[in-house]
Image 1 (cartoon, rainbow, N blue to C red):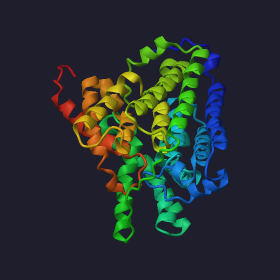
Image 2 (image 1 turned 135 degrees about the vertical axis):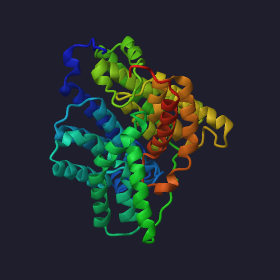
Image 3 (image 1 turned 90 degrees about the horizontal axis):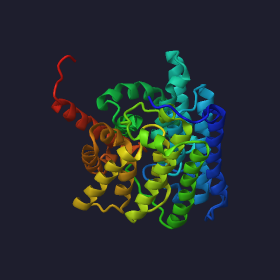
Length: 418
């Protein structure tokens, strides 16, 4: 196992919780100074009252300032959740916090995530297990947050109906997530996105039978792209600098490239926090550069993808296992109908890195195939859950990973003595 060469003080919980606090507060500060058509308070109200279905770019709905403030606030809730649960901050927690913040730019807000978190907490109490063992479902289970908002503000049902639906979804989430994990053998990093997709499909089917239907929407900002690109280039570059200043090493990052990334791969345990932070910043920079190279946009949904990649660069993703998947999506765009600069393919390239462990386990060529298949899958599964599952790529990735792992395992030669 890799050993961190950094001093123990730099791996202390207090130090890194403080650094995570800084990065969430930085989003809030950025939002308060960003020019916007709406005041922060007005924008936040618009965000809270939005149905929040895919794709609801909060930079369109509430303005960029409010969207960034919402991202910071939701990220802070994630950090508080780690503290409340009694868990140590590690790779999974970092992934959860940055994913919460990222999706708070296009679908999550305090109102629609809290009922789900409470539902997971109730599950832990009923099972008489420590809440920290359910921290993953509590954080990532908020993928189904639009269920709460759509019922309350989209269908016009009473608010308590949406809150109750979120509570029920949160209660079911831990059991369903653990049941689905073996299907792809940890090769889909967004396993709870797979879970939320199944649950969202069930919820949407039930709602359609009583006359309520929804389809994915498209709120997509383009006017702040250049400024957001520069701002988050600095944001991600600072992570590399922080890691280097706290004695992280490039050799440690190269050693991380030897890891497949299969769940559960906690890079903070393998390489230490400073080296992990270098990897996080580097992955964020490469993601932003990809968007620029394909002529994409830097907005709420794509920044959600960048921040999710940053978070999972502490929990399974690195350049060696992620770039083949992104390249597979890009190649698919050259051959198939969608262009790489269109919204769907941009998000497929970013969030499709949920399949990074496939490239890490079986090589870059298999990773290319995974990315290629992922684009086609993700463009057509959203209708199943009607935009209720924010981790649509997690659902698509789960289906692709399940298929590919089944075929790969079946074709592998059987070794005697096993």
